[in-house]
Image (tube, rainbow, N blue to C red):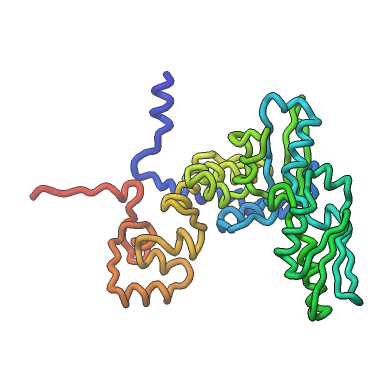
Length: 333
């Protein structure tokens, strides 16, 4: 019985899977809203619906609002305090978070008054802070107690103001790119949700279960884990968008789209700079935007169109190679 059911579920030879998948995703896609979704514990508004779908299909280098779900080792999952300690290690600490920055333009100095409690909590050493300030400020750095003074000779007031703004965001501790890390509860287990993404650095934090941690940045997944993981992430992200809008689309349509986007070993966008602009046939490429460019390039290079696709056969009026159109009959004379 199971074998019979599997056989009936197979796709017939010649089935136009591409256009069926396009229609199955595109038709409910027109009903999507422009809503954003507020993730509990993270201040950012994360796009869902149409904006997120466009973000994925355009293969943007960075999502508008990257987030991560970071899971801790199973032995720590039920201990909220331990999870908060790990979250504190993850959240990036900038200079302005650990002290007060004052400009003394009369003497051409910048004073950084550090908070001893924050230094102790974050396990930061004043020598590390001095080294960072020397690197980013370009001035003479002197430390006394919990105060660090940066002196400038011959610098304009505008240049000092630029340095002040620059050193505010000097990274001192935590994981770069993570502006916030909040501990959330799922049942009796805890996990950490972050605003910002840096999956490679997360793996180095003690107590983090890297195998279960996840980011919504598909490009980062590709860089760190490879194209197969990125393909799975594309499927997961698109299905989350569709399901959040209560749209019932078969996952196999989405899988076909993800396969097409990643078949070259790179993540290609769906559009003239990606899949549509890289079709095998000249006429197929010319049929979708930038018509003149594709025809001129093909003429200059002497490119030949083998007429193996759907679009080019429609253009010249031939039977398309889909369904019964793939059947070739020869009559014996």
